[in-house]
Image (cartoon, rainbow, N blue to C red; front, side, top):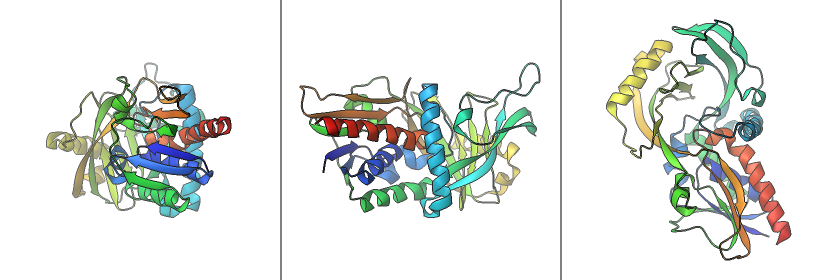
Length: 321
């Protein structure tokens, strides 16, 4: 059995590890942060190709993941994945005509333009999208990995292993582990409130510099978020939280009575383009590194599609070795 080391235990690392382990590889995840401590644990995890490029690859990865998550929602409710209806609010268009479909249109099923979906928003898209409750989903992925014979170990790595087959899913840590200064944080703050009867997700694109989303889960609702480039702070700011709730309540009035359950901050690992590629080890050691990082705000959205590409690369490398 061919051994593979996966570095990183966020949703990308775990998903790649599950694909590898279930395909017969001796898979071991090494990570400084365990799944509940990762940026993935903070995510509202609404399927949406946010801050990820290039568009052609992202659309392909997103479509594959969309299909997988819809399947999980139907066949594995214990995964914490559900398909939820909702609307994306759009800014005004000059001629008042209905907007064309988004660039990722081919990745989803039915998408219907709607007129005047909310105050101040003349157009929107209505569609059903998968939502993963990360307080459940990350644990479910970990259990699936273990069931397939894989392992997950907390360890701090000063550098990537320099021999054997390695999959680098280290997110922001790729700045040092892969010597990639092109990876940078995009800070996102969210508020978790009690579930007060919110049944649909909402995403407001009316002010692109100020993203706003409301994502209902079974027992709570996630309200976010911010997109502060280059900000490394993981401390929640009370004024930001108050502003998020105030803005969200304009579109979802039920939130005005929702009790606040907590505040979280995550640092999205942004990059000009998602990196999914193979590099040989320095010095020509056997094996090599398959890099898979830089997913921005679309880790869940791209996870299964990227994992399939990683699996294909590892299979090719194992045959060549």
